[in-house]
Length: 580
Image (cartoon, rainbow, N blue to C red; front, side, top):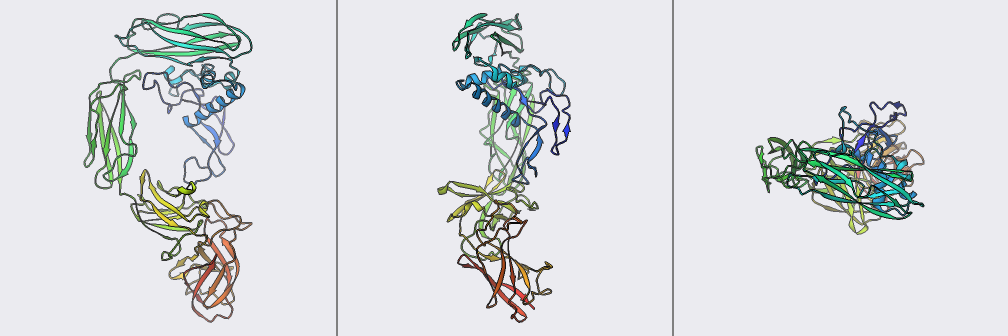
C-alpha cells in the first residue's frame, strides 16, 4: 500500500514542493483483506509525489522525461522501497531467511499512519503492520514467523477456540528476556486473543514456538484487529492480528478483470474473462450469491458463472461482435451491477513488407533503415510521429522483430501508423542476422508473422514527385524541374539502407552532430559519370535517414539523368535527377 511522504518533495525542475497532509494512505492503494480473509497489505511505504529517475528512451511512452527525472505516484513505486529495505536487512543479517527478512520489515513498522487522504480513520485492512521503518528493520535481531496472523472469517458455526503458531527467533549474540502482550487486552466482539507464553528467556541463536489462541464466541458482523507485542533486549516487535464476523450481506461489487478490454471482431478479451468480486461491508467475500449477465447489441457471453464462488468471485467469457466498435457486458449480483466494455477492431494482417524508400526494391532490408509494412487493420488511427527520438509505439501500435535462433527480440521505432501502413526503422540490433520475424501489435491484438531477409546494405534513394529526394547546397532548396541541380555544384541526396556507420546511434535515436555517423565509401553515378562524394552517412539530428553530399559532374549537359548509389557490393534502383 502507499502513503504520502512526510517531507517536502522536489519537482522535475529541482524546485521543492510541499507534501500536503503527509503520512496518510493514498486513495489508489488496495484495501484488504486477501481473497482468503488473510491480513493484507503487510506494509505501507511512500508512493506519492516521488521524485525519481525515469525513462528517456521512448518519447511517447509512460513516465517519459527528457532529463530522465520525474515526479510520479503509485504502489509500483512504494514496492521497490520495501525491496531496497529488504536488501539492507539481508546485507546486515546475511543468515536471515526470507521469513526473517519479512518479519524485520513488517514487525518493526511505524504506527504513525492513522488516516487516509479523505480524512477517515483506517485500520489493519489499509495499514497492515504500518509504515516501513528501514532503520528499525535493519537493527532487528528478534523475528517472528509468520509476521502477521489472520484467523479469517469466524462464522456462528465456527468452533472456537482456534489457534495459530508463531516461531520467535533470537538472532542476536546474547540471551534476551522477552515479554508478550496482546492489545486490545479484553474480549473483542465476544472473542479474545491470548498467547500461551507471556514471557520467556530466549538464548542467542535460539527459537521458540508461541501458540496464539482465539477463544470465546463467534463475533457479530464486523472487523476485529489488534497486535501482539514482543519486547525485550532492546527489541520491540508488533505482530498484527485480524479476524472477522461476516455479515453475508453484499455491500460492494468490485471488478477484477476486463473492465475495459480490446480485441478483434468476433474474438474475446485479452484477459480471457470478465470477472468481479462480491464482498460485504468488511471486505469479506459473499459466496453463493446469484449472478445474472446481460449484453448490449452484438455482444455475447459464454461460460458464465451463475453464482459467486467461495471467494465471492464470478466470471464470464465475453465475445466481441462481428463489426468494429464498442460492446457492453453487464454483471448483476447482490442488488448491484457493473458494466464491462470491449472494443473490437479488425484482425491486424500484414500483406507485404517493402523498402521505406523504394517499394519496388526486391530482396532484403538493412538494419537501421526504414521499411513500410502494408496490410489491413494495422492501426485504429492514422498518426505521424514528431519527436526527434522515434517512439516504440504510436496509438498502442508496436512492431516486434524476432530472431529466435539468436535469442533476439527487439522493438521497432515508428514514424507513422495507419490502418493500411506502418513505417518503422529496422533495429540496429539485427546487424549480422540473415532474417527476422516481424509482427504488428495493435493493443493486445496480434498480426500474422512475416519473415524478412536482412543484408548489411540495401541502398535506395528516397523519391519525391518522381525525382530523387535532394536539395542544393548550401541553400538547401529542393531540387526539381523548377530548381534543377547545377553541373559542378554540391547537392545533398537522401537515401535508405546504406548500412553500418561509425559512431552509430541507438535504434530510434537521432544521428549525432559530431563526430558524424559515416558509412563505408559509397559510389554515386549520375548518367554514366561518377559524382564526387563529399559525405555519406546519417543526417545529424534525424534517426535512420542517410544523406550523401556529392558534386554533380561539371561536364553534364542539361537534362534528366538516372542516378544510383552503390555501397557494400549492392547498387540501388535508378532514380531521376534534373540537371541544368
